[in-house]
Image 1 (cartoon, rainbow, N blue to C red):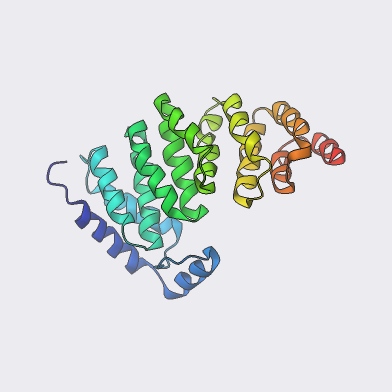
Image 2: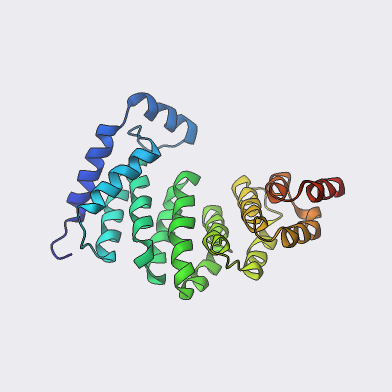
Length: 241
């Protein structure tokens, strides 16, 4: 949209979010997330409502404008502003492409919390990759990155394909096997989360994969992996640990 003021639009969203917050919730959320960011104290549903209402005010806004708006919101170190960034990019994701992953990656690196990373990984990067196969070489690189939040994002970017009935099982194995020995909780949890999602459609594959990797698998990963398996199969796997 010609003449779109991304900074002004970001300021308007931030003002609406600040008005919707409470000091009590801000203190609670800051403590829960152990974050150095400022908090307005807005619930996630209310943040989404504010963002959706704001986006409806720009019906002709193109993807470049949406990304510029999202980046403008991110610049200030305020949790809800950054949550609004994730929500705007989520709404824009059906129109984004592999070229936008550089921006997503930068935001992941600057996030420092699952509360921001997971939405960027699943609802933005994963949705882009589901439509644009040029995304996968980029995400393949994330899987070997030194930053564990970036590695987690590679794993979680597989979820939209799994949920759409298009699981990339060889790619999951390539990503997950080198990470099984990691001690980082958020990596262990992510491997298990992806296995749990696969098991909803293909429990036999997950049971076989889990059995093959039992010696390397952490308790966190194992518990997530077997959560949706038939009880008898989960019990057999547990007995083999």
